[in-house]
Amino acid sequence: MGNEKISSEEFQKFAELIHRISGIYLKESKKTLLSNRLSKRMKDLELNSFNDYYDYVISKDKEEIIEVINGISTNETYFFRHNPHFIALFDVIIPEFISRSHFPLNIWCAGCSSGEEPYTIAMLAKERGYLNRKYIRIDASDINTEVLNLATHGIYDNKKFRETEPGYIKKYFKQLNDKNYLIDEEIRRSVNFFRFNLIHDSTDKKYDIIFCRNVMIYFDREDQNKVVANFFKALNPEGYFFLGHAESLYFMDSGFKFKKVQDAPVYYKE
Image (cartoon, rainbow, N blue to C red; front, side, top):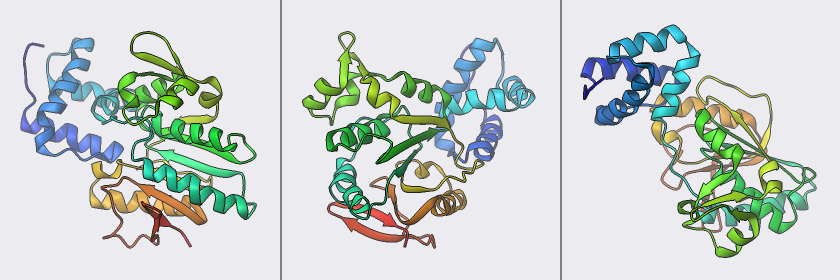
């Protein structure tokens, strides 16, 4: 399709569609990013204009919009990202639940990307002797089907280990070649991955701990309020909610209570 760039009008059409379907809010500054991501898919389909592709997306309903969401969602993450959260979880929060004989613990990693976060939790649970369904059950979801496929296969390049101690790599990964590693099968089987749209999907399952880190920064305030309210409903009383270190519920009337657990800011449901 040559070097065609998306127009402001075309950008707005796609941005509104993406926001309506996924909650992801694209600013005008993302125009080049969107143009480049959509162009790759258009080339595969041999479509010559963004308007043609928009019509194609609409005609295919959910099938093609999943491809669009896969193309524009941000998925940069790594193992042991913001480790103070995991230290607080395993040094204080999980022992607190276990001491009250409150188990199994249901943990949900929402917006899990390619699985580094739930697999980090699984490795640490294994280290503490908690990695069985008697004590901990780990669910992990994302809207992007491509990263969920990566997560279920469990193959990672060495850039994902920037915060990982060598002992964990040696113990829980098999080196496949110069840069790729396969995660341990027991760790892989311990996480239940599934596709979930935080804006439109709902769950009847109740959780004790929910992670949703570095996800809501891509939503506008209205959708943030909606998503947080849904998390509040999904969380059991005395449960904990983890946000990214740059995210906050300060301006929301969410029902959550702020709590500092060691060096980790977390939220608590009374």
